[in-house]
Image 1 (cartoon, rainbow, N blue to C red):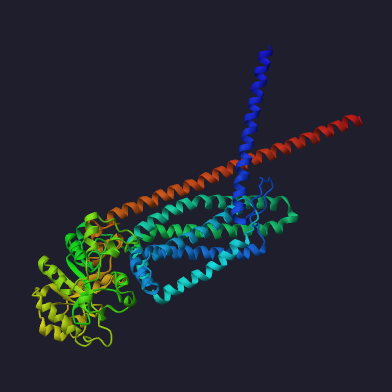
Image 2 (image 1 turned 180 degrees about the vertical axis):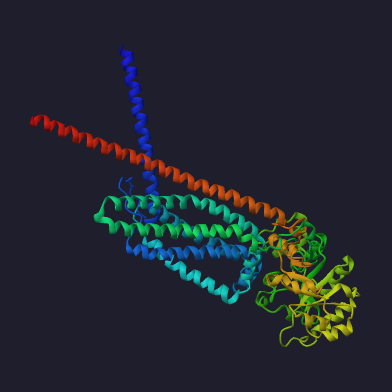
Length: 607
């Protein structure tokens, strides 16, 4: 018997301990959760206990309510700038080069800015989410003054970045437009999915307001003295329902019909897809070998380049050589050989000196590579790169003649007081003709002295820039070489309609090359020839019928989910209302029963 009692007592104690343990876990977890929220937001790490009576939703001081819009502003600016910079990834190398010109230090400044914007966007997003969670838990908002100072400093910083972009990088906004063109169908489908997720809190809030409205209507009928106050509150609740629900359903309706106005170049039939654009190796293949060197051009040929692009400068003794920069610091060892002359224009050196400089160690041995996504070189390529020298124009022409590749180049005018300042075009034409290269392999880009060029070298293919169709016809030009951002303007349709061959520069990112491919462009100039050459199909390509299927399927599926979510919350609120009404009825019945019993008792006593 004692054993049975001990067993029963032990079981009872175990059950109590389990209940006590679950109670500890429940409240301890909530306290940790609230302490974390208030600690991160207000820097107050005291334990926050769960309160039975919660304050209303508007639970912050006037000062906090006035500051909250600044937090939202900083969040919007940070996310917008982060998105803008992510979509500008095709420009990262050019951005790093511009910063190098000002600082003299080669680094991935573009990735530094990307990381910085990412940190700031995460920071503002975290503060915004913490504030919303505290509001949800009906806690008072007290943003710490450290956070407030940082937010107020971030807003002018973001404004400065926007001003710089609007003033100096206006055309970079066109890259955002191009990215939205190719991603339009996917953004549409993703937006519908986001609306389905958003419908959950919207349904909770709208049905909660409906419950409040019902309670106010009941108060109007049951309490005539508070009729005006209840009517005013009822109108406010209805206004809140309209303010929240109407925009939600209007946005959802727009998303359901937006494909009627959607245009994406990569939304077309498979048989209408144009042939894959050909490649001009930009300074060769600068991710595989040191730019503007023999190794770089041979790598470009190896990976299927249709043409070779370069930059030509003229030495002080009249030798055309290949060099892009305004000095020799970045791509040669000039600082080791002649540090005092490292900032001098390359055209002021004699070829006998230029030919002795190493043009490959910076590429193979430096710990910072010219491109962030550049793959490691093999030992054989490293050894070959270390022995590269500055190449002459004739070296490039020999490769082009041997491999039957087109040659296109930017011809830099020599600086003032240079001996070839006025005759550099004649000098370059003479060198090309002396090389015996087939004239049709030269795509002549410089716009000066075209009449002279046509008389001396009638076989050259003349290339224009963003000329009008009349100017192209007058000059008898059938090929243009333009910045890829010009694709934003009507897709260069007027040039394609006039049978003008189009080459876009500089296209490095696969998504951008996919857009170019879908837009029926003939060729691109690229640094990333290896990756683009391996692409067998455009990214984000979709047939109209398949998109139509996804569109209708997503519309129906999302409508079913959203209706189900609203019905579920409506049913749950109804069940809660029934339980509440049952409890109220039971309480009223109990009270009435007690009153009757009391009256009966009094009556009996009186008798």
